Length: 262
Ligand SMILES: Nc1ncnc2c1ncn2[C@@H]1O[C@H](COP(=O)(O)OP(=O)(O)OP(=O)(O)O)[C@@H](O)[C@H]1O
Image 1 (cartoon, rainbow, N blue to C red):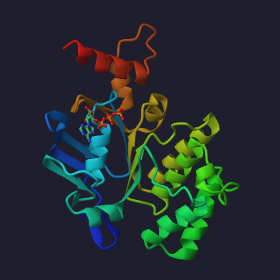
Image 2: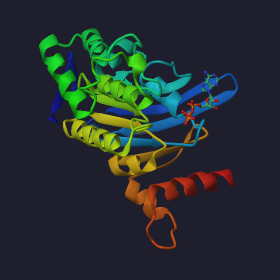
Image 3: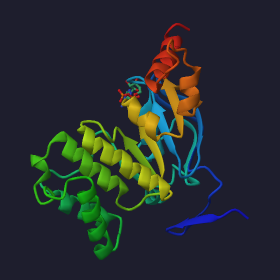
Image 4: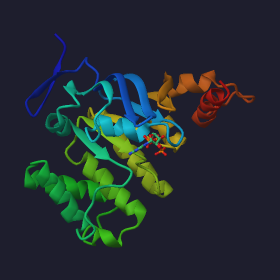
């Protein structure tokens, strides 16, 4: 029998994918934003989701996080269909493009509020909030109002909010955008640590060096279709490079340029 994972009463077979979609499709009027998407992401791995602007990444994430209803097809997160919003929400954390924070709250108030919504135990969550704030270099500013924060500081609060409850699956949209190199490194290390502890990460980013470092598998979306999916190494190896030292950026450019000429 394969091992099982338990979370808020949902028992889950560890051999099953954390995220699985079948012909997942979203149409806005005549625009097909996501078309027949089939993905299966193993638990405890990082899936790098790439694509040019307008490829359909945010639409996909919003369907997987239950914020948007698919037009057709199916999607499951930790075995729960995305049509079951309340149960999916128990398994996930989400850092969207614009982190949902209250300007008038301090970071500590915002995170305590997020912990309360999640019904986390106050004493353990206060401790975890402080640990994460320290880790991410925000402890000194934790008592200041978010209205006074820079974009990078808001991103950090959003990231802590997404990881606070140790979700089974974390959807991270540009977790390092706007962060200085040291802060980016801290975020990469924090994400790596969460994955080691079993979290599955769905990572969408245009910062390809970060994706290359973190992702076990990379999927490239182009005009709503998954046009490539492989490990970063395999994708890079496929790219012709004169010096034989390809990068994920080169691979991405080649994959998406090829498409423009099809
Ligand atoms: N609410 C909406 N109504 C109509 N069309 C939309 C809506 N949201 C997105 N679209 C369209 O769906 C397509 C996919 O958009 P989406 O935001 O998912 O792309 P993306 O890959 O996240 O882009 P980016 O990298 O720029 O954030 C685009 O053609 C976009 O114009």
